[in-house]
Image 1: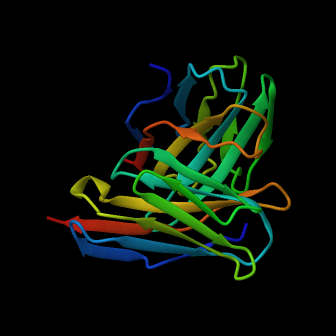
Image 2 (image 1 turned 90 degrees about the vertical axis):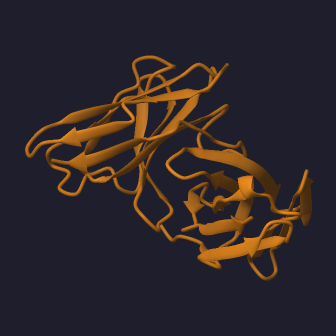
Amino acid sequence: DGGITQSPKYLFRKEGQNVTLSCEQNLNHDAMYWYRQDPGQGLRLIYYSQIVNDFQKGDIAEGYSVSREKKESFPLTVTSAQKNPTAFYLCASSTRGVFESQPQHFGDGTRLSIL
Amino acid sequence: SQQGEEDPQALSIQEGENATMNCSYKTSINNLQWYRQNSGRGLVHLILIRSNEREKHSGRLRVTLDTSKKSSSLLITASRAADTASYFCARLDSNYQLIWGAGTKLIIKP
């Protein structure tokens, strides 16, 4: 079945550590997104990518980095510069260019906590 | 970016009743989408309604859009326990930014 796979499901970060969240899709989608979700709030966009080797900052990119070396993969690194990383991170994809009138397909998220 | 307003924040109803959730916004839109999120899971797309459409149906779901009032509603008829989830609206504004509401938490009591 086609879909988006995020791993790990749970992740713990130590002080000063960078951690990387994996996102893989086999839907052949061009666009991919990373969102952060905090309790009681809507999704906030961290980064998005329309094609391989291209990505753009979203509303809350500070302290995060991404890469898009393959169409299927869009990993997110939470760096030590992100002082409040505890949140639920969601990866999504859509068929065509970013923010066109296409629904987004989501993975099941990674919950990141501070040790 | 400016989030949409959803109300109510939480809704608890008996199984079999209808549930209505609302989403209001302040700027013009290209389209508005509704998503469902089960606890601890990703979001699932339900319905996309374009700015020139007034109503769309999908099974027990009905979405309306009133661009003059800048609001949309999601109606779930004959609710089931499996409908228990959080429901989010997301609007694509005129700058092609997707703006998410804070969600309505729906609980269906058996």
